[in-house]
Image 1 (tube, one colour):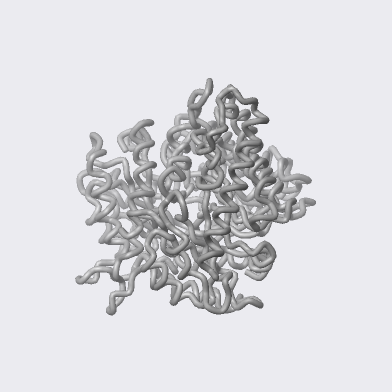
Image 2 (cartoon, rainbow over the protein chains, first blue to last red; image 1 turned 120 degrees about the vertical axis):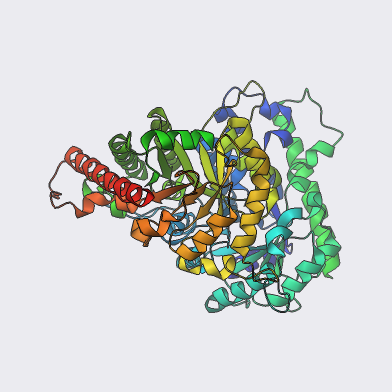
Length: 310
Length: 310
């Protein structure tokens, strides 16, 4: 996690901006389209405006690949153009892909980090431009190891789902699975510490981070204590209900950078609450408003978070 | 599952052919490439040969999307061309995508089944050509419901991971989580029955199938009993170690079609064991050999499975 923590320290802001475009949060100037290709192009324009607006203020963007996948291969092309653009601006790109499989299949997904297969005259190529990805742990270590190997090879990171922010997460994650009432998420926290122990960096965190939702603060604080060498990615801030006070306990004692707090709608859809939006604006004017509102919301989030950290 | 069971009954064969191309199992005539685009084209040619060879003999193909994703967006374009081609031959296409997320993100992934977003003048378009997909249950019902809704709308199905075939699956799935020692997989089986109860079709199975690996026969038989209204997708046959005898117990009493047994390498890489392969063959000759060997292996698998069913 050294690269991540270095960029976070540089901007002095633990926020992560989720780049999750969908028709409902784009100004209508961008959704009056006649083809999936045009909609994908709108996603790219929207993302570029937001990336330009938040660069320098935040260090990390987290595109949610599902939103792009909804547009098929052309959507995924725009995902890659978005990650390449964010990378070119010096942002750390955390691909929220939640992939999970085993053996050679997991190794194939790990090309997100390690690059395309090298075969014949073909050299490995970084197609996805991600510095880290999220991974689903349902299949156990067989589903983690190929991603960890790729991360080590490419000096990148992975974030394993541990306790998610949604209501029904408890159906599986909060099941008691030990004699002392240890839950599946708590057991998973132990495994994540174990799996990561040989990959700790200069800041004391391993290459395996954990995703811990902000919407169950007690559960999150308990997991923070069980994950001393694990950097947290915390979704659920803002639109999903988590507050700055809720997440304060997730930063470690020895460093204010033990966690990264992610918000998507609260930043990229902030333009919807701006009274200066007008339906008869031009596409360019609408994109400018998107950018201005996103920058303002990102600054507010930074101030709210840094206030509880000091 | 009515559409699936109808096509299975028609061919009288519960086999599923995994379409999981990767450089290591392609003849070298197809891997001497200079670009990712060329490798993707080789995957498509390889898949088409296999689809042509097994059509009429099997009813279901299961492309593993990770293999295509390893080639980036151009790989996913070939995934879609593969599924479209298989569909055009009347095959039921089970996309092994193992997606899992919540809320609007899961809804975006569900476009695999429901089609692209309808917005502006843009109509919904089936971009992925899948009749069913696999889904990861780690996030609970919030991560299932959007897929189930899409499946109902489009008369398609989903298969939820319940007990996978890999060694470390036990790290999470075999954890005891109830007072009577019920495991996570067993608890999940109960949830799958519950989640599916309003979507049962004419054959008595719901739209939510379960993925149950063949490599732990005792565990699989127990889950079969706990899943009376759930159609099973059984990976791990052949190359991963599962035998016809291992899977026999997974078919229900009232129908020999309570399960579908999947094999990938055993069929699509069967050419590697054919002594008539020569490195100096032409590309076309190599593809013909791939097809011939796949057809022979698929016929053998059908005979092995139908023998234990009678």
